[in-house]
Length: 603
Image (cartoon, rainbow, N blue to C red):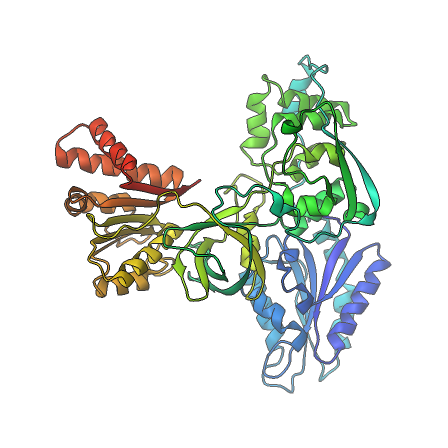
């Protein structure tokens, strides 16, 4: 992000806030700054524009501390948004004749602070009763230096520098500069006209992995936050979309998503393609390359913006072939040598430490090598496809399908000094509202289907992994058939993030769910921390189900839950049947083959 650009966001009932905001934007030009003046309601649907941003808010209060009409929708959207790395200041306008003097500006500041936004300049409240100018004039006069300081420290991603020890190491190495050159698969040229296709045209021609139905344009019917807002928990949402396809319990779907707007534009700026962002280009494959070797996801006619926004995974970890390409386009010799070293066998350890262990994005990688400017055409062939995201059906409604998702605030966890990078699809979904469109397709069911009778079902899940079982139990309830069911769920807290708990308790009271076992990893008084503990603590009951031929279903994380649950079932089987752990593993293996041990897991 530029160290000159910032947002001026206003909410105005009578025009005074708008006039002050216009003045701030105009005055900033004479200081070499670039202000984008926007009304609050213009940002609705594009709330991710607040991420990694510096913003000056000018808002008034109306009624009894209510937001201005042109700020109401933004105020509502802000309650469902957690801006990432937002720096802000706020100038409020009010009238002390009213009981709730400055009510809304005060509420806005409180919400921004609670959302984690950082104030870079003092908040002031001007009183129209005594004269707005008494506060407004000195506030604007003192704004510029703090604003410049805030801008100088703002970027969409961390601005990185190469470690000096790595550069020193390079000076003692004989770098092979005769490595094979990267093969350019395409030639391209820009056309005079703009690219006019709208999403998902072009993208919908790609192969849809495991598709059982065609791509469908669906409308969001409802979105609800299921968890209590707390620093201790993840935000979990339930979303419902309309569909004409026929879904059943245990089904899943793929959803096309898009990269974040701020990341796309930052990459376009870094590649010096801002002025050609929407220009149409045509690709011509190199005739020497066999057709089956050409990436299928690269559109032959497209625009840089469309390609980066909808078709390419700009978050993928760079492969060595990309490093070789980047090395060829570094003006600085040391930067090129560093990239060649990192792409070599000898540089594997440093490659992991510098890039892979930190999950650096393409933007951050380019910031490490500021003299590197790869041709967009060459970069295209090294970026993988932006794949659909997959979700399980949590419930079937009269008008559509429901599913749940966690808002992932940081895909790389806590990695030293690196800033948070929110999940691509979850942060996009979080900003959607009722009436917005999504593109989905039903996937082939891989065996996660409820089966009535026949020994019953043992369902194990943690977090959002419990969602499919809601549809399972609906199916059992509607069938009126006798079927034994056991549900084992795991969450952090019973009261903060135990999604669908009330629904499961209702199924239990109605006799649809016979055994409901829960584990809470962060509640001190919980008898079980993890679902594995529940299986161990209730081993006799679990074995009764297994001995009667029950099917086992496991939904959740592949590395943690899936492995831990498998080990615990093997342990319980080993002790109960007096067999070795290896023999118990063979029993589970046979259950898998018979379709009696089914997993729906993700990494």
